[in-house]
Amino acid sequence: MTSMTTGNTSRADANRRRILDVALAELLRDPDASMDQIARAAGVVRRTVYGHFPNRDALIGTLVDGAVEAVAAAHASGREGAAGPAEAVARGTLAVWEVADRYRILVALAQRSVTVQGIRDRLTPVRESCAEVLRRGLAEGVFSSPLPAPALAYVHEQLLFALMEAVNDGLLPAEAAGHSAAVTALMAAGMPAGEAAELVAKVGA
Image 1 (tube, rainbow, N blue to C red):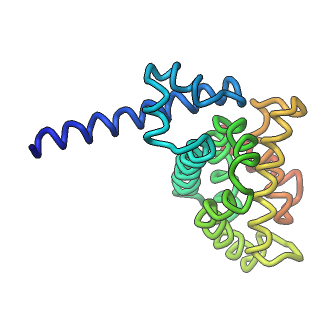
Image 2: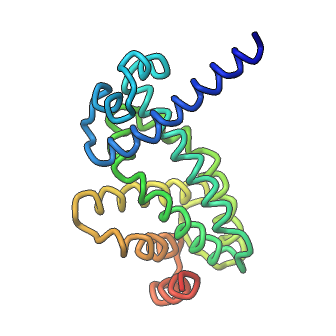
């Protein structure tokens, strides 16, 4: 009995992972993809999809959770070994953008189905980590801003969202957005434009 239960659980988990993978691909291809479309693309009946996710918003919310986990991991790994707060911001932003670029359409879609507050809540650990780096940079005089570090971290977060929208709307080439995001984040923290561009070019090489 235990073996049968374990087998059923493993199959259900595999189905759930497949549905999420296919749903992400379908939604990035067609932001209006329905649950029926996702079920067909995943090769399962609609009832199976609804068995894991009660509605489309729940499915998108789960995808957003996965995106946030990936962003948090990228932010942490990007900052490893950074020589000071400025380099940490540059490396962290570049690393985050590499992951976030994959989810650009999803973020825009999520803002329609998941509350903006919900997205903000999910990103709290990343924002707090960013605020700590900014706090250190402000204390060391590397950064200069009239804003306290926690508020400046919100500015950086919204900057990334705005650049995602700019790329989605065709206003900024996707291949240039990561570099632009890192330079703009450093400038928002009070770093001169020339120094910011030079640092990002160095760490991004």
